[in-house]
Length: 530
Image (cartoon, rainbow, N blue to C red; front, side, top):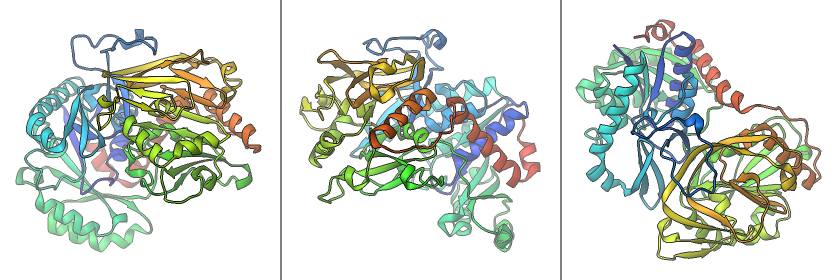
């Protein structure tokens, strides 16, 4: 019999993803065949993985399709970044079964529905529950059964709060998963928010009777200070609920990628990542990132922020100030990130005259995926991508390319050649770079142009665009880019830590496992077995 443990929470962002990743690594290190599972996720930080279902899922090892192909490769699908990371923590090849239902918000209360890795359609929340939820539930059960047939333990992740009583009849990630997986439940509560004991007690009381009976314990997360101060409260909550507190996790960030944009500064806020490494200001590189309203796959920037001496500064597209936003943050380079809705984010940039700031900026500019599309001369067939009826929109005009949107989405894990001689932004880089593509538009050059990252890229002067997500996870590309930024800015950037993409993917899981090993009841951890 497969054992299933559902890691649920009293609220969003209580540490569920970290605990699941840590448990997957602990169990894998113990020799247990374990897989992560999240029936339904909502995130714009996605990864491309093997499609587990479908007669044409194929063999991904043979895939080397060109980035300018118009064919849709049906062997690939997309899942939330947390389940991708958790599968890697479990030492598995991630598949779409790890996250069979994914909702990707695109603004105005609407999300793109992705089932078994395939994008279906854009749906408002009400329409999803009325017209699609039953199909989503069936897909989730099918995925769970396939995982359970192949693994001894499933560590499932819930979503938000398990006690949303208005959703108990359609709560796929929590209530439905607990039932169809016959799961035990580990409940997490974040003490940093305050009111942890009240939140824990209220959550347990509001659970349906059959779900309450499945709760085997709880963890208090994100605690700062002496945990013995919690003892009276722990004794009282255990007495009132009969649910044991199995551990108190200290506030710690193992470095796992953010699941969504909630961890980023707000649309109207400025925020900095990576500025706490002790490198003095005169040796720092400041990479400005426009905080697009519909930003996606912001995890592309994490490898830059992890480098000593590099600050990633999220800049409001329109902060109401008359000063050039790039001058205001003393930017040395700009990276335009991905976006779930290129057309409407282009409108936001143009309304705020952010394009003018880019045109007068004299440092390196890189666009990734949607950011690449924004840098072009124009977007066509735009009504398929954004709101409104405009079919053609002028882009920011920094690259002589044009993007046309169509119904099909390109999904592919890929490796591209690196030609550092094609752009000063990657001078000295060579070999290959690996990552993934996930986009709806097709981009073509309007004139002969350099392609330093294969057909998935375009470069002219100080500007580079690429469809390759994870491009900066490649050490050679990242180092060459930062050295180019340092030359442009006249900064003596210190030696960097050459973290390989493999280390970036695995080290945080080890840290999460250590966190659990040190602070969670050992007997409980040992009991998680088939």
